Length: 314
Length: 284
Image (cartoon, rainbow over all chains, first blue to last red):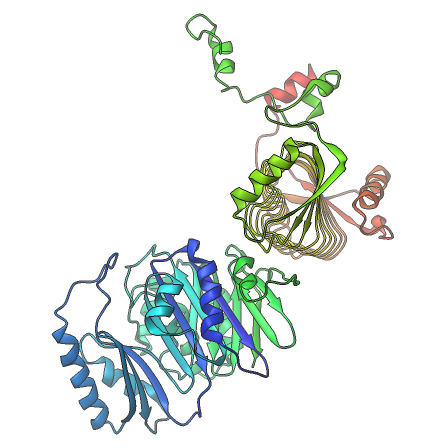
């Protein structure tokens, strides 16, 4: 089933980590195999923030293969060495969990493609997000468990999207969890509720065009599909509109960039979405109960129609 | 229960509740003897007094707790119940088989007022997916917008949304009337079998797709027609009925019904030469 939620504050910052945790926890009945957050925090915009993993969570319910924890340290060492070789300086380093790391990098790069390919060439390493504002945090468990594990409730920013996952078509692991980074674009992330039925056809085409897939989760296709459109010069909104015909199946998805948040709904309108929109806040989720967690007072909400695409700026 | 060893095959099936021909909704008067209406009641329903009014704050209740408390209040004879702080909770007000005046001060989540037979309900907010699914009789009024599958499979009663509704409104409906003050999404009236849908605004693609029967009236633009949905002539009796219904629904009283489009089933998809068994009985 899965549940998605997102919000964007316009003209101000707020405690988006805590707000999104409340929204996703309200949707936990839609799936709690894994939960993911894409948070756009307040930063000075000078350095890149790279969230990456050097292994999988192999805890209860995980479909990943158990590894010796010592291999994580080995991989981290190689990442550090590779970063130094390509001229990326580590300003700050956080290792919340043995397999999950956050680096603040001083790195002068116009194109993140080569950077990402170099880092991900290290076996077992995956970049979860790369950007000057975006941080993707995803792990097994429900919204509160993940929020507590990574201390996300204090993160202040302008907007955020998140996903509560019931695994149906791929494994219970971090690599299949949402949000997906819009590789190789800085600060682009995607969450999706639904099923894409032309995943393999699109994947073959996109891989031939040089795009990268990290999982076998159909939802990853959306991030790659839109990233490829943007690489060819389309705007975010144009890429999203193209997806309405380019992607087959049922879907409601959100895309966020460093200064915008968008939603798209398939032409069958088969997946739910409830939307609240005001001058200073847009909040949306698979169910109204998610919006109520941040706006308990009586408000006007609505369901976007079939084939609708909307984009809001901060 | 009858002794199943001794009864005939036909009555055995009926004793076990396996017969499907007799429809039991109170609005199915075609199959129901009006003389017996006064004697008809469901097990576990109550004799309530509409003048006896109370309020129920469900803010800290789960949906089952809230529904149980509504039932408890009805058992005490309360005929008018005001629900405070529903806050988008799912499945509120389901399975009320009673005369009751129910008012929600706020919005409902999914499956609100499902499988009801008889209550008069006003929701001063929005409703999520599948509101009033399988409604058999009564009236449900939504003051704001509604989600998809609004009035799915209803068999009777009036279901009114003063705002706009999502996709697949009236899917599989078998009777009753759905009235929309605003716009409606894609696949409105999908596979409907009986009943009427009135939409004052625009409607999305595939209107009335694969409908078996029933009628859809549209005041605005139509995105596209679904398979086997065709235009039909809007008669003067249709217009009179529309005016009466809109007046009762408290929306579009000044709406020019003469310009509405009437959509029915083309009946090309299935074999309509053979009457359903229940229709045969009526014809005989």
